[in-house]
Length: 146
Image (spheres, rainbow, N blue to C red):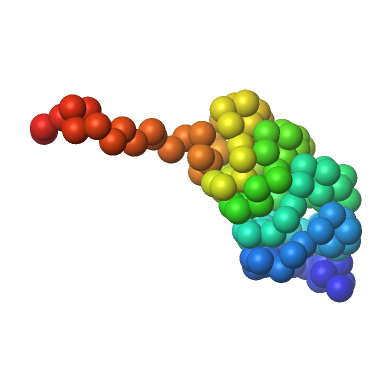
């Protein structure tokens, strides 16, 4: 149904905790592909059970949106994504000429390897991932006075 909106320039969708699967993402990617004028896309997939292969399918079906300049992808809580999922997100970012992008991967099992793949794909990305969170030391000696 989204593909019928050929003049759509901005799209915000919330699929948080909807038990999304690869099949759903593939169909969604196909639909968005028909929105040739889409410039802003904000997708919330937090708390689903997505895996790297699902992101890869979404990217394949989405193709390249020539007008897309702003993208937000929220994948927090998709524990099965891991670094391979982050690498698939990086490939999606590389296909588009984005001026701004935001990727949220906290609680998705992503390490420094996945973070670096995304950073390499788009150095200006605003990224939230567990690998970026500072370690908290619990010993009292580690506390410095300011």
